Image (tube, rainbow, N blue to C red; front, top):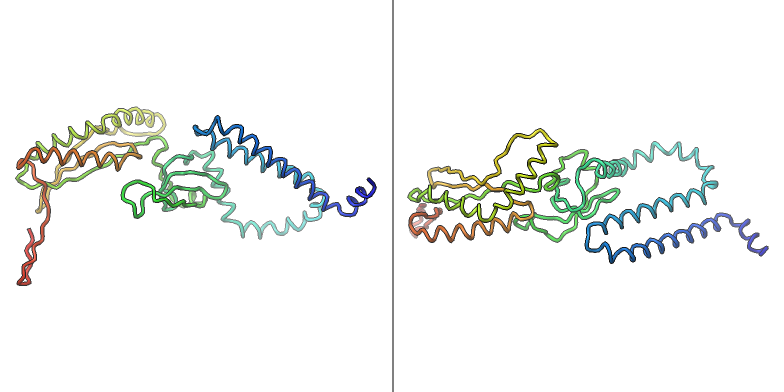
Length: 296
């Protein structure tokens, strides 16, 4: 055993590295073992993501403690150098530091959490991960019409929460007001069109209205809000081309496109049943061979 003692005295730094690697492997194996045991119980709930993140934080914290304990005596000579370089490092890593501060703000400032739909740094998507430096979004919109996934994963620096607005679609009120506009010819029965729109909207959005009413009351306990109309509403406007009826309704932010599809489909069916009483207006351009253009 003397050769081991001599080797450790001759190469103390190498021995410390070996000990650190041993602790690293033990912590990694333990973390993987515990997570594998918990996966069967938590895979179908939102707790799996939280458990995985907590396990990683604890693992990193223990590694830091082990590192300081093993190498602490070897780092004392660098105290002065670290102090002198502190200002330069802080300036060079200012974006990183602000992102870390943003991470703390997100965790404790009620900005958003995983699963929320947000608009952050000009990117709209669902939050799938909140890291120390970046928040990961599953992008929606862009070239895809409606609030549906594009398939791209976007990582946005946490520092954006300090220098740009954060739009949260699901924080305290997971509903949105949406509208559809339908142009009608002036000869159409406007009153009948209004009645049809309200009947169709009630059929497809009544559940959202009830849930939104409860959520709005809860919002009023937290914020200074006025009473808002959550009932379906129809408005009529016109210009020199046609009259336009607008349907305003409340919908779950995740169901905007599917709800709009149901509304348009049934509205068209109901309008067709009324025949000439309700006619949808359109702009038609007719090109004459002589070079002139007629528009009606």
